[in-house]
Image (cartoon, rainbow, N blue to C red):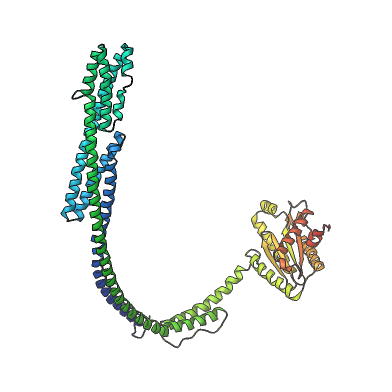
Length: 528
């Protein structure tokens, strides 16, 4: 190996790489400084202003939901829906308090939410009070109706006097005026009962149940009173929630303005940092341009020329590659010249092997395809006629099964030798088509010429007299032959002509084997 030299490509490349890395390091340091400053500005927005704005939006949304729940709390029809509403209201108060403690320093906000919670507690107490009265009314009314049912059953007159009064209606009363009207109606019925002097006990029972200090009418009055206070309390808390929501919205607007200002400042800082980085990038781009031109002059131009010379050599040029420098590229050229000569010798040998059948040493299927395409081109160009003969050994599977594959290979070799000797012109070709099939290309041969060659091939195989006891009582190896003739009219069919020969071969097999059939005769239905 050559000693390390200052003028070597490796040394020059290392110098360019190290200097480029130093430039990149400097750019990275400047970029780090500039981006750190921007990150501090940006973190102020992302870590403080934006989360605070999100929290404010959350509080505003929770307050809206809280207002809705409280306004509709008194209208809840079932105990389950009330419990769900109570639980959700408690959760909202907890969330709003937490958001306030983590975001706001303004005392008036905390006072407001505390006041709102105090009023909600009063609402809750009034709701419990109203429900308690309602429950007492239901229980008292149920007991009272049972007692009155017993009295009514004993006296048809009592039932007729009290019939206009429906005691159950008291549950549907929603105002004090309705309650007074209901009490007046009951007292009128009681006066009628007193005049009859028959129902003194019933009158006393009704008055005790309805108008006593803990009677149903008094309880209904207390329930309506609690309902009135509940409505006033709900209106008051709705007003507080509305004001609180406006305060939150006002703070949101102020914070949004602050966020916009901070974003503008961050954008200006980012623009400045981009300009600095752009200046450094342009400087580095100029340096890279210098490196590119230097490498182009020292290596790429030479490598392009080297590649051009190599392509010429690959395409068949015989001249060895040359270079006027004494460096790594020169060593590559010398190595290429050495291995190119070696590869040429190996390629020639491989090409011979790839186009030859290993068993029979005849051209193989691949070589046949090449020569067949060339023959089609020859027919089109010169308007000539050529023929293809396709040969198949009769009952060859039985031969292999009974004599063994070694004898089968020997049989194919003997047949291949006979066929090779049958080729009299350099323009003709015989090849192993596959398995026990062989194929001839007879250039510039018409139908009669091809039939003549086919008869000669049958005779040659007959004379070879290879033993085959399992070949339809013939006692020796025979072949069947299919022929097709190609002219300028059907040469465009390409390999379909091979299929035609195969069809003719199949017809020969159908005729009893050991014969030949031309596709033209087979196509016309003629018997040979």
